[in-house]
Image (cartoon, rainbow, N blue to C red; front, side, top):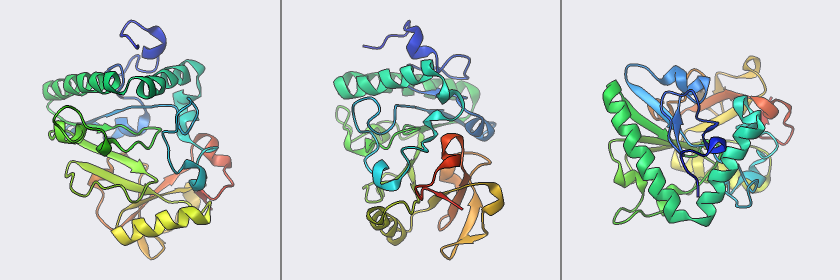
Length: 252
C-alpha cells in the first residue's frame, strides 16, 4: 500500500500548491495558467495504456497515441516520476476499494484547500489514463462525481460512447485521431453526440481556423475544457514524444 511517507510516491507532488497521495495541483504550466481567482485544478497521473500491467487507456492502440503519449512530457520524463505513477496504477489494479478510499480523502482535502483559497475545486482524474470513473461506485454513490457535486470534474477521452451526459459536473472532450479505421467509428460517435473534440497538431503554424466544418479554438492557453463553448474543435500542439508521431494521432 502507498503511504504518505513514501518518498517515491510523493516525488511527483513535491513543491505543488496542493499535494495529495493521488492528486495534486500546480503539476504543469498549462493548468497553472487556468488557476487564479476562480479555479484551481488538481490532476491524477498514472502510467498509461498497459505500461504498469493494467490497461487504463482502452482505445489507445487504435487511436495511435501510445508512442506519442504526453506522459513523457515535462516532469514525466524523469524515472522517479514514472515510478510514482506506476505505483498508483498498481494500487488501482490490486486494491480498488483502498485506492478509491484514498481518492475520497484526497478530494475532501482538496475541497477544503480550495475553500480557504476562495476558488472552485476542479479535478481531472485521467491525466494520463482513460478510466471510466462513472462505472466505479463508492458506497451508496453511483460514482465519485455524484459523491462530490461541488467539484467540477473533466477529462479528455478516446471512448466516445461513455454514458456521462446525466452527470452535470463532469465534462468530457473527445480526442481526435486518424490513426486507424477502427477509431473512425469512435470519431463518428463523438460527432453524432455533438462532443467537442481535441485535435493535436504538429505545430501552432499548421492549426486552421476551421476543421471538419467546425470552428477551431485554442486549448493551449489553459486546460479548463468545461468552459469551452459547445460545437468546437480544441487545438493542441504536440508536446514531448508526440512531436515525432507519424501514426495519425498528430495532424499536419
